[in-house]
Image 1 (tube, rainbow, N blue to C red):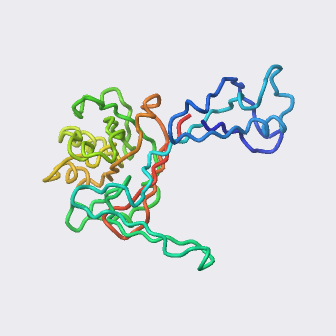
Image 2: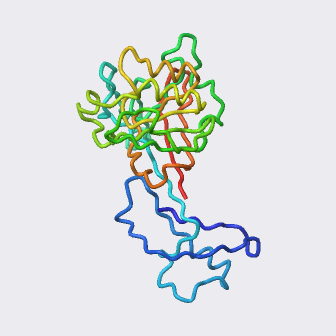
Length: 268
């Protein structure tokens, strides 16, 4: 858990209620960052110090959790069946060149990545053509574990135009296995059309694809300028915050149909 304390000068903040709670770092899920900064805040606001605090690491002010939903790309990262395996090699070494440098050879659809319309739509937009604001927004999590991914899963969710919708199927835990690529659930056409009707900006899932050949779902989404994020890591960690978290999904700016993307989610 990241515990964020405002860094404004003394006298400029209205102090909200302090909440004291125990934090067990060992129990935090993968990808959660822990950073207590309560001590700095109390130095600027000594009059606000609670009477009984045993240690600063138990003081929580505006809890902020940052979760990384991105798989790390290595030479062992499995590609989509039929795609080339990535090659990540070190080309320079400090001992001989005075610096370290690596080289990567890979397709764009490796690990956690983002698809742009050009991937499936003739003359579609390249990922590099999108303005930066498309990669930030409000996110919502659809709990699709052991369920058909149909429009009824969206009932009661307050999704707005331009929002991110992440679909959690539970398949992230199988990443790297044959089952992950062979048995993943697909998004139904009706679910995709519902997202089109809302006008979402992007949809992500913890599977290698929202569909299979002939890739009808890809074409529905990309044909309506909805970006696709595949191979999300551990979206189940977002289940306590299904509606309303902040998403930053920044793809590498390659002039291509897709690119690896770093997906960070902020919850409060």
